[in-house]
Image 1 (tube, rainbow, N blue to C red):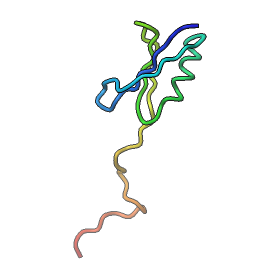
Image 2 (spheres, rainbow, N blue to C red):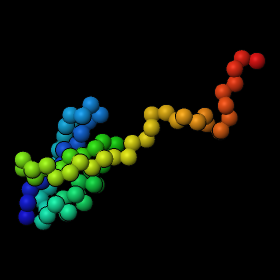
Image 3 (cartoon, one colour):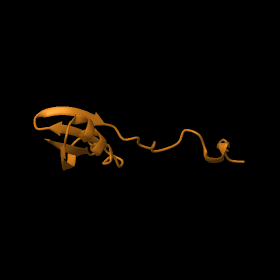
Length: 76
């Protein structure tokens, strides 16, 4: 068994928290860390060894196409 830390990455790129994991191997640790993805990326480390960065699927802040598919109308 190996010890891991899954660090939650804030929007500014800094770590905002972590969860300790004890797993059989990297594959199991990645599987467990994937469950932590909730709007933030997660970096997985085993001691000083970087394992991987898991990227969340963020929703865009805005949509390029207008709601309803209609264009914007100017003043009448």
